Amino acid sequence: MPKRNKSNKLTNKNTIKRIRRIATQTMVNKARRSKYKNAIKKMNLLILDKKKAEALKFLPKLNSELMKVAKTGIIKKANASRNVSRITKKISAL
Image (cartoon, rainbow, N blue to C red; front, side, top):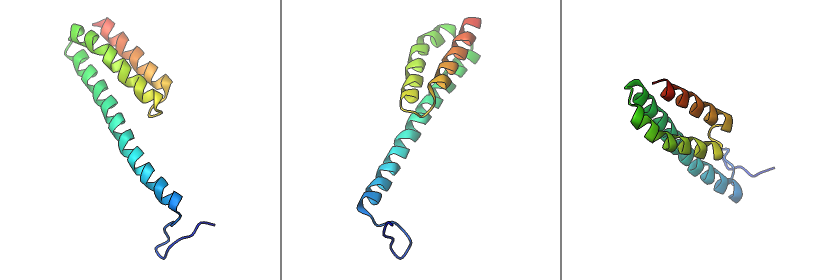
C-alpha cells in the first residue's frame, strides 16, 4: 500500500512525478483541443460568409489539424473524418 502523509496525499516519488506529468499533459491537450475547435469555427465562418475560394484554401490546414488531434487521441479518427466529410460537403454545396 502506498504511503500517505497527514493530508492524505501520496508521497511516493513516482506518484509525485506522475502527477506533475499529468498536469503538463493536460495543458498540452487543452491547447490542442482549443486549436482544432478554433479551426472548425473559422471554417464554419467562411462557409457562412460563402467564401468558397478561401474555404477551399483553408481545407487542407483544417484536415491536417483534425488528423493531428485524432492521432494524439484528443478526438477519435472517425470523428475527424466525419468532420472533414461534412465540411467538404458544405463547401461543394456553395
